[in-house]
Length: 436
Ligand SMILES: Cc1ncc(COP(=O)(O)O)c(C=O)c1O
Image 1 (cartoon, protein in one colour):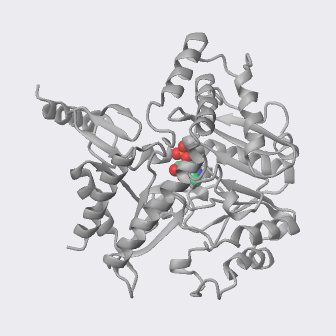
Image 2 (tube, rainbow, N blue to C red; image 1 turned 90 degrees about the vertical axis):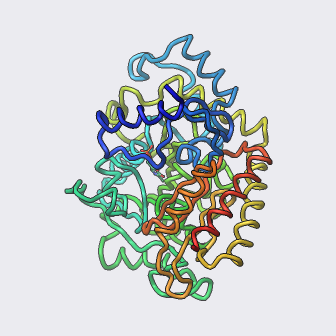
């Protein structure tokens, strides 16, 4: 069978036996991947600006990650941490206790998916505070489990048809400056959206009933919405004053994605708990919660856990990821990438009317596309065209946003200069095509 025939045949079999719910952003089937390049079963190479949705910050098949995985798989693959323990579990907790913001005593626990990390952070917050209410943001994404979905704010495709949702979830407007919920302009507004949290505690939910405020430092699926610099200082301060825990969901924004290990470092605010996932383990399934010792240690023995939580292969991969960050000075590379891409994107914004806003932190950058700059009518079709055109030319890039009109870059931080140049060239061509 020809190589093209192989992928047609695979597509047919996929459609026959796999439900449509687990979506596919591209029709590609992978055969191998390395660094920032994926090769499909037809032998065609694609530059990867998606990173498996923000998972591949250290690149595909980094030799150190592969070696760690091989070594651990040769020793043992699973004992269940709750049955027979292993050192890498607390080793990673020790490392991340040092790396996450906040000088206080911390603990960490491990799970498999981001949604589970969110669930466990909420469980610990409720147990510790004895309160139920969780406040989250409009445009948030916190996962697809029932609680994650309840905290998530996008009807299609995430919520529609999947209710009823979990109770005691409350939502306040997001600091989405481009589409300000208060119709104000930054900085003249004085970040009035942060004060909405305090107002909410007066009008909707008494602080005595609020366990935690959970937010993404950069709202990922919501459209790379980047809160103003003082937003989290203000909201963290409100949380502190009212005895509410502040949880930063760094699942997409962590591990160098924004040029710092954790995006919250850009804001200087200190969360009580941080949820991590995605790029933590270089492509292996791992997530976790790191936070104040007294909070995470509050639930009784047996109250937290799971069969696969903190799989030793994933943990060893995560320890390798941290070594890679140090040895390759990946944070500096991320910062540089961010600067290069932002310069390019801002130049495009001057040339192409379809770009309403360029935003993000470091190399976590998005282009919000609009049909018309004055009306700001979302350009979802245009974003779809950019992704499709890019794919045709050999670049994988994803869209996001409540309105589906944001083109986002989650490129592996190890991308080579030539690949980056080619990827940006294709993306620019695609943006210019979207105007037609
Ligand atoms: C900020 C954030 N939280 C939670 C999740 C859920 O992670 P997972 O898909 O691993 O359950 C995601 C996934 O995109 C995310 O971006």
